[in-house]
Image (cartoon, rainbow, N blue to C red; front, side, top):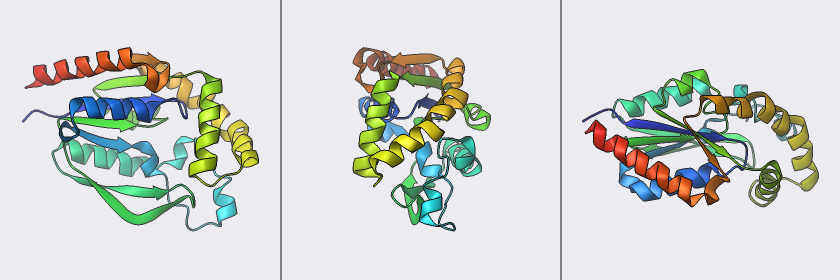
Length: 208
């Protein structure tokens, strides 16, 4: 069996990265794809009070346990399953639960800093950057954080201007230069996604 094809999908917060990854996953059939989301690898902050956790810069590279992420990615590449951590975004803590991710022909890894982190980037065969207009992203982020992560409006806006936007300009947007493919208009760009799926299928055929 040949080595898996590792595909990294990066882009700004709420740009549609997860939607692109999901559509690729579904088109190639789940049995052929292992999925890793960078957000599952946030560092555990249970040792500090909740109010302090809310002020942590979750968009900075240091917020992630990069060693665990790269280690599990490398394990999957050797054909072994991993136990991916489960992160609680309401409490900003890593739970005691894990999810088993089995090896597959394609490994999809998605996250804002997938192309920025050199150690992660070195493991990738295909590098994708998902691009969406800033106003669309902030509205999506606002909706998600209030409905799904227990934040209030003022906190989300404060966090956006204090952490999210500066980190996007410092780390996320510059990482686009490492991309092999840039997908405009996020997860709604079905033409680009269909072309990606076709290209990935072709790469798999050439590897067999």
